[in-house]
Image 1 (cartoon, rainbow, N blue to C red):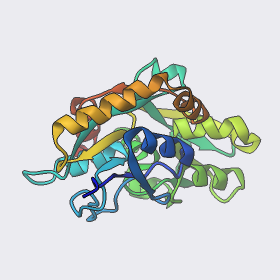
Image 2 (cartoon, rainbow, N blue to C red):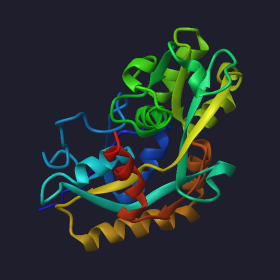
Image 3 (spheres, helix red, strand yellow):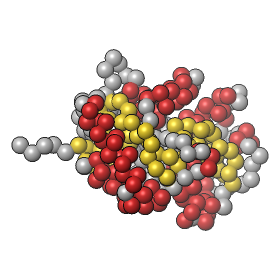
Image 4 (cartoon, one colour):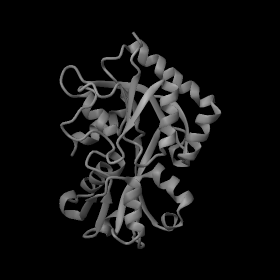
Length: 259
Protein backbone atom coordinates (compact mmCIF):
# COMPACT_ATOMS: atom_id res chain seq x y z
CA UNK A 1 0.00 0.00 0.00
CA UNK A 2 1.36 3.41 -0.97
CA UNK A 3 2.28 5.71 1.88
CA UNK A 4 -0.25 8.51 2.34
CA UNK A 5 1.22 11.92 1.57
CA UNK A 6 1.20 14.64 4.18
CA UNK A 7 -1.25 17.51 3.74
CA UNK A 8 0.02 21.06 4.24
CA UNK A 9 -2.62 23.74 4.82
CA UNK A 10 -1.49 27.37 4.54
CA UNK A 11 -3.47 30.35 5.71
CA UNK A 12 -0.73 32.76 4.60
CA UNK A 13 -1.40 32.79 0.85
CA UNK A 14 -3.58 35.89 1.12
CA UNK A 15 -0.48 37.97 1.84
CA UNK A 16 2.46 35.84 0.77
CA UNK A 17 3.14 34.36 -2.70
CA UNK A 18 1.50 31.02 -3.43
CA UNK A 19 4.74 29.90 -5.10
CA UNK A 20 6.53 30.12 -1.73
CA UNK A 21 4.20 27.54 -0.23
CA UNK A 22 4.36 25.39 -3.35
CA UNK A 23 8.12 25.20 -2.84
CA UNK A 24 7.71 24.54 0.89
CA UNK A 25 5.30 21.70 0.07
CA UNK A 26 7.88 20.22 -2.32
CA UNK A 27 10.57 20.29 0.37
CA UNK A 28 8.21 18.65 2.88
CA UNK A 29 6.93 16.17 0.28
CA UNK A 30 3.38 17.25 1.05
CA UNK A 31 0.23 18.09 -0.86
CA UNK A 32 -0.67 21.77 -0.55
CA UNK A 33 -4.05 23.29 0.24
CA UNK A 34 -4.65 26.88 1.22
CA UNK A 35 -7.23 29.40 2.38
CA UNK A 36 -6.67 32.92 1.04
CA UNK A 37 -9.47 34.51 3.06
CA UNK A 38 -8.19 33.96 6.60
CA UNK A 39 -4.97 33.90 8.63
CA UNK A 40 -6.04 30.85 10.63
CA UNK A 41 -8.94 28.48 11.20
CA UNK A 42 -12.28 30.10 11.91
CA UNK A 43 -13.35 30.06 15.58
CA UNK A 44 -14.78 26.65 16.38
CA UNK A 45 -13.10 24.95 13.41
CA UNK A 46 -9.97 22.80 13.75
CA UNK A 47 -8.76 21.15 10.51
CA UNK A 48 -5.98 19.39 12.42
CA UNK A 49 -8.36 17.72 14.87
CA UNK A 50 -10.76 16.95 12.02
CA UNK A 51 -8.01 15.14 10.10
CA UNK A 52 -8.10 17.56 7.16
CA UNK A 53 -4.47 18.69 7.59
CA UNK A 54 -1.20 17.27 8.93
CA UNK A 55 0.87 20.45 8.70
CA UNK A 56 -0.08 24.09 8.66
CA UNK A 57 1.27 27.60 8.31
CA UNK A 58 -0.97 29.71 10.51
CA UNK A 59 -1.07 32.97 12.42
CA UNK A 60 0.53 32.97 15.87
CA UNK A 61 -2.81 33.63 17.54
CA UNK A 62 -4.26 30.47 15.98
CA UNK A 63 -1.24 28.46 17.12
CA UNK A 64 -1.68 29.71 20.68
CA UNK A 65 -5.41 28.97 20.60
CA UNK A 66 -5.22 25.47 19.09
CA UNK A 67 -2.19 24.38 21.11
CA UNK A 68 -3.94 25.25 24.38
CA UNK A 69 -7.31 23.60 23.76
CA UNK A 70 -8.01 20.79 26.20
CA UNK A 71 -5.58 18.32 27.70
CA UNK A 72 -4.65 16.90 24.28
CA UNK A 73 -4.26 19.78 21.80
CA UNK A 74 -4.56 19.00 18.09
CA UNK A 75 -1.24 20.64 17.14
CA UNK A 76 2.24 21.39 18.35
CA UNK A 77 4.97 23.64 17.06
CA UNK A 78 6.69 22.42 13.90
CA UNK A 79 9.93 24.06 14.96
CA UNK A 80 10.35 26.53 12.08
CA UNK A 81 9.46 30.17 11.42
CA UNK A 82 10.78 32.74 8.98
CA UNK A 83 12.92 35.86 9.38
CA UNK A 84 11.72 38.99 7.54
CA UNK A 85 13.96 41.11 5.34
CA UNK A 86 13.50 44.05 7.71
CA UNK A 87 16.25 45.81 9.68
CA UNK A 88 13.86 46.25 12.60
CA UNK A 89 13.60 42.46 12.90
CA UNK A 90 17.35 42.38 13.62
CA UNK A 91 17.75 38.92 12.12
CA UNK A 92 15.10 37.44 14.40
CA UNK A 93 11.81 35.67 13.53
CA UNK A 94 9.72 38.71 14.51
CA UNK A 95 7.54 41.14 12.59
CA UNK A 96 5.15 44.03 13.23
CA UNK A 97 1.67 45.39 12.70
CA UNK A 98 2.15 48.44 10.48
CA UNK A 99 -0.50 51.16 10.81
CA UNK A 100 -0.90 52.82 7.40
CA UNK A 101 -3.15 55.69 6.34
CA UNK A 102 -4.00 57.63 3.21
CA UNK A 103 -3.63 61.01 4.95
CA UNK A 104 -0.91 62.14 7.35
CA UNK A 105 -1.58 61.44 11.03
CA UNK A 106 0.55 62.07 14.09
CA UNK A 107 -0.01 58.64 15.64
CA UNK A 108 -2.55 55.88 16.18
CA UNK A 109 -4.58 58.04 18.57
CA UNK A 110 -5.27 60.49 15.72
CA UNK A 111 -7.27 57.80 13.90
CA UNK A 112 -10.11 57.90 16.45
CA UNK A 113 -13.48 57.88 14.71
CA UNK A 114 -12.02 56.80 11.37
CA UNK A 115 -12.37 53.53 9.45
CA UNK A 116 -9.49 51.08 9.96
CA UNK A 117 -9.03 47.97 7.86
CA UNK A 118 -8.13 44.72 9.65
CA UNK A 119 -7.25 41.34 8.19
CA UNK A 120 -9.65 39.01 10.04
CA UNK A 121 -10.73 38.36 13.60
CA UNK A 122 -7.91 35.88 14.40
CA UNK A 123 -5.07 37.86 12.78
CA UNK A 124 -2.26 39.00 15.09
CA UNK A 125 -0.62 41.82 13.12
CA UNK A 126 -3.85 42.70 11.34
CA UNK A 127 -6.21 42.83 14.33
CA UNK A 128 -5.04 41.81 17.82
CA UNK A 129 -1.94 44.02 17.69
CA UNK A 130 -4.23 46.99 17.12
CA UNK A 131 -6.67 46.03 19.86
CA UNK A 132 -3.85 45.52 22.35
CA UNK A 133 -2.26 48.87 21.46
CA UNK A 134 -5.60 50.63 21.92
CA UNK A 135 -6.22 48.97 25.30
CA UNK A 136 -2.74 49.91 26.49
CA UNK A 137 -3.49 53.55 25.60
CA UNK A 138 -6.78 53.55 27.49
CA UNK A 139 -9.11 53.23 24.47
CA UNK A 140 -12.04 50.89 23.98
CA UNK A 141 -11.19 49.00 20.74
CA UNK A 142 -14.86 48.44 19.94
CA UNK A 143 -15.68 52.14 20.07
CA UNK A 144 -12.40 53.83 19.11
CA UNK A 145 -12.91 53.50 15.34
CA UNK A 146 -14.86 51.53 12.75
CA UNK A 147 -12.88 48.32 12.34
CA UNK A 148 -13.51 46.68 8.97
CA UNK A 149 -12.43 43.08 8.29
CA UNK A 150 -11.20 42.90 4.71
CA UNK A 151 -10.06 39.25 4.62
CA UNK A 152 -6.44 40.04 3.73
CA UNK A 153 -3.55 42.39 4.45
CA UNK A 154 -3.15 43.25 0.79
CA UNK A 155 -6.89 43.95 0.50
CA UNK A 156 -6.64 46.29 3.49
CA UNK A 157 -3.81 48.19 1.81
CA UNK A 158 -5.71 48.38 -1.47
CA UNK A 159 -8.77 49.81 0.30
CA UNK A 160 -6.65 52.52 1.92
CA UNK A 161 -4.94 53.31 -1.37
CA UNK A 162 -8.26 53.65 -3.23
CA UNK A 163 -9.87 55.72 -0.46
CA UNK A 164 -12.40 53.11 0.67
CA UNK A 165 -10.83 53.04 4.14
CA UNK A 166 -9.00 55.75 6.07
CA UNK A 167 -6.32 53.47 7.50
CA UNK A 168 -5.32 49.86 8.04
CA UNK A 169 -3.17 47.71 10.30
CA UNK A 170 -1.26 45.09 8.31
CA UNK A 171 1.53 42.52 8.42
CA UNK A 172 4.79 44.48 8.07
CA UNK A 173 6.28 41.85 5.73
CA UNK A 174 3.28 41.95 3.39
CA UNK A 175 3.36 45.74 3.44
CA UNK A 176 7.07 45.84 2.60
CA UNK A 177 6.62 43.36 -0.24
CA UNK A 178 3.62 45.21 -1.68
CA UNK A 179 5.44 48.55 -1.47
CA UNK A 180 8.17 47.23 -3.76
CA UNK A 181 5.78 46.73 -6.66
CA UNK A 182 2.82 49.05 -6.03
CA UNK A 183 3.54 52.77 -5.96
CA UNK A 184 0.13 53.54 -4.41
CA UNK A 185 1.01 51.46 -1.37
CA UNK A 186 4.57 52.79 -1.20
CA UNK A 187 3.14 56.30 -0.95
CA UNK A 188 0.81 55.56 1.98
CA UNK A 189 1.69 57.17 5.30
CA UNK A 190 3.36 54.86 7.82
CA UNK A 191 1.81 55.99 11.11
CA UNK A 192 3.07 53.48 13.67
CA UNK A 193 4.69 50.07 14.00
CA UNK A 194 3.14 47.75 16.61
CA UNK A 195 5.26 44.97 18.03
CA UNK A 196 7.53 43.16 17.56
CA UNK A 197 5.60 39.89 17.44
CA UNK A 198 6.72 36.32 16.66
CA UNK A 199 6.38 35.45 12.96
CA UNK A 200 3.91 32.83 11.83
CA UNK A 201 5.02 29.25 12.55
CA UNK A 202 4.87 25.88 10.87
CA UNK A 203 2.62 23.67 13.00
CA UNK A 204 2.16 19.90 12.98
CA UNK A 205 -0.74 17.69 13.88
CA UNK A 206 -0.29 15.94 17.21
CA UNK A 207 -0.96 12.70 15.33
CA UNK A 208 2.49 12.90 13.70
CA UNK A 209 5.37 11.29 15.61
CA UNK A 210 7.82 13.82 17.04
CA UNK A 211 10.65 12.17 15.14
CA UNK A 212 8.87 12.79 11.85
CA UNK A 213 8.19 16.41 12.80
CA UNK A 214 11.89 16.86 13.59
CA UNK A 215 12.83 15.48 10.16
CA UNK A 216 10.43 17.90 8.46
CA UNK A 217 11.86 20.80 10.47
CA UNK A 218 15.40 19.85 9.50
CA UNK A 219 14.45 19.53 5.83
CA UNK A 220 12.98 23.02 5.80
CA UNK A 221 15.98 24.49 7.61
CA UNK A 222 18.29 22.80 5.11
CA UNK A 223 16.34 24.42 2.26
CA UNK A 224 17.92 27.74 3.26
CA UNK A 225 20.82 26.61 1.08
CA UNK A 226 18.56 25.81 -1.88
CA UNK A 227 18.67 28.43 -4.64
CA UNK A 228 14.99 27.99 -5.52
CA UNK A 229 13.91 28.46 -1.92
CA UNK A 230 16.17 31.47 -1.52
CA UNK A 231 14.52 33.05 -4.57
CA UNK A 232 11.05 32.40 -3.14
CA UNK A 233 11.98 33.84 0.25
CA UNK A 234 13.48 36.95 -1.32
CA UNK A 235 10.38 37.42 -3.47
CA UNK A 236 8.28 37.42 -0.28
CA UNK A 237 10.52 39.94 1.58
CA UNK A 238 11.90 37.13 3.75
CA UNK A 239 15.49 36.06 4.46
CA UNK A 240 15.55 32.51 5.82
CA UNK A 241 13.94 29.91 8.04
CA UNK A 242 15.10 29.52 11.64
CA UNK A 243 14.37 27.10 14.43
CA UNK A 244 11.79 28.15 17.04
CA UNK A 245 10.06 26.46 19.96
CA UNK A 246 6.71 27.00 21.64
CA UNK A 247 8.24 29.46 24.14
CA UNK A 248 8.86 31.88 21.27
CA UNK A 249 5.08 32.43 21.16
CA UNK A 250 4.62 33.08 24.89
CA UNK A 251 4.28 36.87 24.28
CA UNK A 252 1.26 36.18 22.06
CA UNK A 253 -0.40 34.04 24.72
CA UNK A 254 0.28 36.65 27.38
CA UNK A 255 -1.11 39.42 25.18
CA UNK A 256 -4.30 37.51 24.39
CA UNK A 257 -4.84 36.93 28.10
CA UNK A 258 -4.90 40.71 28.60
CA UNK A 259 -7.72 41.26 26.09
